[in-house]
Structure formats: C-alpha cells, structure tokens
Image 1 (cartoon, rainbow, N blue to C red):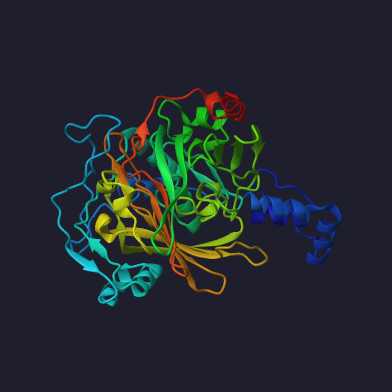
Image 2: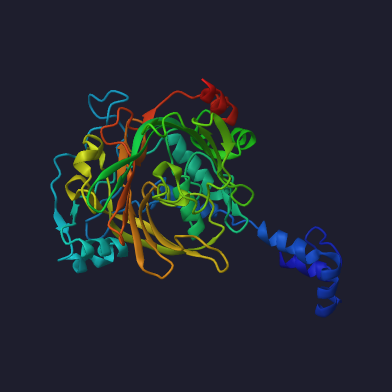
Length: 484
C-alpha cells in the first residue's frame, strides 16, 4: 500500500510494482489530493484493506498441536483439562432422532462447589460478574464436574476449516468476512473481531428446528411466559451439499431463520424472518415481521444493535441474543487472550427436565447446571466515541473447542456490573454439532432474569430436518403463510 501512496504523491500510477517518481513535496501532494478527491479514495482503499489469513505453515498446526477447530489439543499441565481426543462422534446407544439427547457422563459426581465463601480461591477462573452474582446471593453456587471435551464436528467441516485458515479474510475494519465456508472462518485468530466472528458463525446443523420458550423471572420468583416460538434455521455456510463458490454466488447470508409464535395468545400467529449477513459493513440483519393482528408483513430495519428484542418483550436487546449478535461497527473490539475458566458445559441433562425445575427466584437453580473447567478466548467490546448502546461495555468468553459463546459480562454506562449471561451447551453427537439448552441473563441490579430459548422438556430439542426450498426463507413465503 505504501508504494501506491508514494505513486499518488508523484501523480503517477504504480506500474507493475516498479518504482515511480516522487519529486512533489508533501505540501503539494496534500493540496493535490484535496483538489482531486484522492483523500476520499485513499480512505476507501484503507477501509477495504483485507486482514489476511495465516500462512500455510501456520495452518499446519491444525493437524498437530491444535485440533481441526483451532483449540489446543493438549490438556493443561495440572490435568484438570484433558486432551482433546476426538470428542463424541456417535449417536448415544438407543437414541432415536427427534428424542432429547441423554445426559453426558451421568456417572460423574460434583468435584466441588464455588460460592461467595470460597470464590476468591478460584477468582482467576471466574468471570467478574459471576463473582458479583455470588456475592449478591450467598446461596448461589456453581457445581464443578470433571471436564469432558466432547465437541466433535463432521470431517468435511474439518477439511473446510483447514482451508479457511489461509483463504478466509476480513475487510472493512473487520466488519466483512470473505472466503469462509464449512467451519469457523478463523481457526487461528489474530484479532478480537476474528474471534467474535467465529462465535457468531459457530457451526450448526445445516438445517434444524426447535420449539423454545422465553421466560421472564421476577425478583420474587414469578415465571412469566414472554413467548413460545417454533424456529427453523438454515445455514448455507454449513451445507455440505454446496461448494464455497455456490454458497458465495447464491447467498448474501450465512444463516437464515424463520420463527412462528405459538404463545402466549397475544403473540400467537406472529412470524419473523431473520437473515444474517457475512458483510456487516454494507448490510445489517435483514429482519421481517408478520403481525397477525394487522395481517401485515413489514420490514423491521430498526431491529438491530440495542433495539429491544421482541422475542423477549424487551428484556434483552437484539444484539445480546445468544451472546453477542449483529454488526460491531459501533464497538472497539480488543482480544484479551485465552484463559482457563469455569463455564456451563455438557448440559444435556437440562433438556430432560422441566423449566419449573430450573427456574427459581433471583437466579437459575444451581442444582440443574453443570460447570466445567475449559479454555476460553476473552474479548472486550467497548463503545466507540460518539456512538451509543445501552450496553456499552462487555467482556465475552468463547469456548475454544466449539467457538460457542459461554459467558458474557455486561456493564452499564457508569462502569457498574449489570448482567451476567451464561449459556449451557448441548451436545448433539448424533449430528456432530453443539448447541445450547438456552441462555440465562441475570440482571445484577434489580434481581430479575431472562431465561431465553428454553428447550427443557421441549418436543423439538434441536432437531435436524430435511432442506427446505430456498423460497421458504423469503418475505413472500412469510406473507403467504400469514394469509393462510
């Protein structure tokens, strides 16, 4: 790039990488640039500069010291995190597609518990806001089980991830992903934005559906149904029937979802279409709503950033869904590195319960959540000068084995702890994928919390489904379904 700038200084184009004259002074150059508009062109050039993938030599780590997904293959020196040996790669014995998956290692016992009395002993492995939650409620605890590195993904996805390491790039200050297909785009990340992209583009079954409920839990423990929704998602980025070229040619979105609300009665019949772009420099989430009471389909361009999430009746923002969602152009994103941390893991047991067993006042029932020690990537998001967001500061912790968001600490504008969000992971070994059993967002200031995407006891707990026609995920299809 410097060569091109020097050539513009001389008012001569670069020629096949060969040097050019530079007899103009700096002052003359700046005045010429202003007159001709080249400064704007240069700014555009800088904006589109690509953050390249790693070298072929570094990519080879994915076949040695790193797992095919980019995690450290070895365990830790203490032996409290085991080595990754391939994960769970088969359906559980006797499992029938569509059934809830059985618990992971049900024979495991709680090794120890952490609460307000002993949390200082483990503070280097706890998020800051999790410790605030413990201090606020002395009865709250986390039960720590043996760490099980169960994550496994399809072989073709491993092969594509290896290619992603050298071919996937970001442009536009990290707001656009190019060249990624089949797996995490940046298995050997160098920046915070790359880590967040890996989490936002976390691997899923090519197409799946689930029936989930969203609950508000008041400070007194009352459980209020905010919405019941049947969701179906298709991710062309993870469709093994496609090639990279076909994916890039036929879709501007790496994931598309369609929601149909079945409760409560006030929301029954509403529908929603969400299409998520890989280029957030040009586009935002493309969201459409069908309002049953008005029999009207409308585009919802304002459902981005910190707009109240209609699925949770505004108890969370759109950009807080499943961790951190949507474009990050309003934030500075800093990679804090990797650390060992207790996170909710292997929580298939929760899907076998009812939500009544999980919900209690102030915080979810500690008896129901399994925590384990794993390595995570830590990323800090801070609102840029001149921008605004109701959640201006967050630290996200992302599991190295799955690239799933695990814990997010959120802070208010005055710097005080505001929310602790944690997402128990759900191992779908029959489909070689890892999803969530739901997400808990505990408000540390007012004693309420959100239980989002609860699939406990659901008749559809992340079920793989045959591919839908492409037309299914369009506004026209949503409008036609609404007319019926």
